[in-house]
Structure formats: structure tokens, C-alpha cells
Image 1 (cartoon, one colour):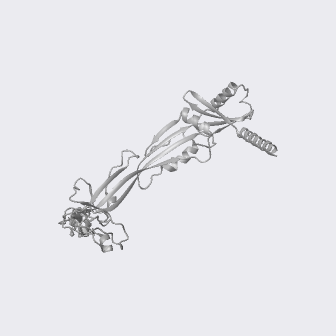
Image 2 (cartoon, rainbow, N blue to C red; image 1 turned 60 degrees about the horizontal axis):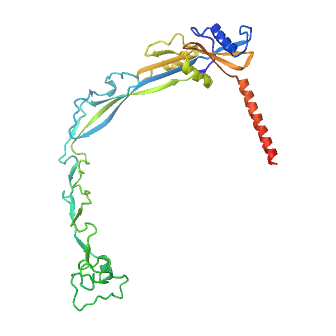
Length: 371
């Protein structure tokens, strides 16, 4: 809502009723003033406007489309040559977003392939999902140190007679108890005497197979010939999309005070009108409001639907010479004319000057106490 002084338009508030309402408000506050005296009062008209425009804009385009398998396109509308020539109904309301998907005549193509929905058996594992793997692998510690896995049983699990476990002096690590023959300080700390220098494979953990790294254990990979798309259908799709766009008409000039806007929105008797195509503007609309709304009624090239919601409130601004500290705003309410007094610029300036003077005085006192 903005404030724009103008001449009083037709079907606005009667100036006599406005002055009578302001006079009653001043008398209720204990003041006495003759509003009929020449030059004692000034009335300007600053009616409020809340206008919102919703347009439905249509966009048409063509895009390539494809789907796997054998999609059913029989329920889609068919257009010929140009999607711009295909008629579709407007949306039920300008706020409704709707999308029409069409098929261009003669554009449907079927692409067959022998694969299974874009997948073929993995060439590495041949669809088995796993690859064979040795259950046992050579102990890296024994191979590096070039020593036996167990100096007592040599990995057989039976101690040899007359053979005393001796820690080889050239080994940099301390040997441990053998898990096969139980000899202390005799086995390699890595494999613990498990087999003739062998240990369980860390990849398969002794299972004898591992998941195929080519297919990730799924047994199938994407078919390169069709790009992994499999049997599919392609066509040219026409898209017609209706999307809403919302606008708000704002008046130039100074805005109304916050208290007046709040009171007017809460208790003002607003005049409302909803316009479609070819509907005239309300007769009681103020001239400045009419000048702001009329340019928005022009139909745009891609527009298929529109609604204009207008709410306007007659409002008068009254200044009284004998009451210089207040400005009175008058508008029709549900129970008669409403009068909202607000502080004038003169009063606001005096309050601001007093506040600055008080702040300066406090600063001087504080400086004096700190010295």
C-alpha cells in the first residue's frame, strides 16, 4: 500500500463526513477545534490499493524421447508437423500448472536387441558371478626370510625326533608357538606353522572363489552394442506447458505509516473486484490506481488465462493547524469511519532531537566521571 495525494475521485468518502469523524476524535481527547474555519484543516486523498495479477503462460517445445521395452503411446495426443499448431484447452484456473505430452506423427522408431534389457553375461566369469581362487597362498614372512614355517615339524604337525627347536640367529623377529605341533618358539609369527610355508588366502579366506571384479558379482554387464539400453522405442515428443506467473501492482510514492497499514488491513472495509478478460475496472477506482492497473491488463503473447484481484480502500489524510503534533488518517470500517492518529513529522523530529540531547548529556556525564 502506498500513499499518493490526489483529488477526491467519484464515489470516495465525503469530505464533510471525514471532517466530522476527525472532529469527534479530537473532542474525545479533550481538544476543541473548529474544523470549518478557513485554513484550519487540509485534506488529501491517499487511497490504498492491493492488486494482484495471476497469468498462465504457455510454452511449447519439441524434445527427443525414448523408453525401454515396448511403451504404450496410444493414449498420447498426436500432432502433425508443428507442435505450435496443436490446440489444447486452457487451464481451469490461472494458478493451475498443467503439462501436455504429445507424440509427433511418424516419429516413433523401434530399436530391437537380443540382450536382456540392456544386459549380457559377463565375459570374464561367464555369468557365474565368481572366479576360482587358490585356498592357500605362500606366507610372505617365510618367503622373505627364507626360513621354514616351523623349525620343529616343518609344517607337518609332527615333531621330528632328535630335533630341538632353535631360534635361527639371523631372523630379526621372534618365533611363536606352532599351531600344528605345539612347539614353543618354533613357528613363523605370520603363518604360525600352517602348512609348508602356506597360509590362508586373504582374498577368498579359504573359500576357493572370489566375486568377479568385472561384473561386481552380478553375472551381467551392460551391452556395449546398444549402450545398455536394450530394446527400446524412440520418438519426437511435443511438450505444451502452462505455468502461472504472479505479479503485484505497487504504487509509486510514499508508503502509509505502519500503524495505518495494520489498522486498515485489520478493520478497513475494502472494496473488492475480480477481473477476467474484457472486464472493466471498477467505477469507484481512484485515478492513480486506474493508471497503475490499466497497463497490466494488456494481454501477453504466450498468455492463455488471467485473473486480476483488486482490493482498494478510500483513505483520507487530514492535518489540523491547531493540532500540529498529529496527522489523522480516515477510512471506512465495518462500523463506520475509522480515525487513526499518528505522530506528525514535527513531533517525530522533536522526539529525535530530545533523544540525541539525552544521549549527548549521558556521554558528557560519563566522560566527567571517568576523568
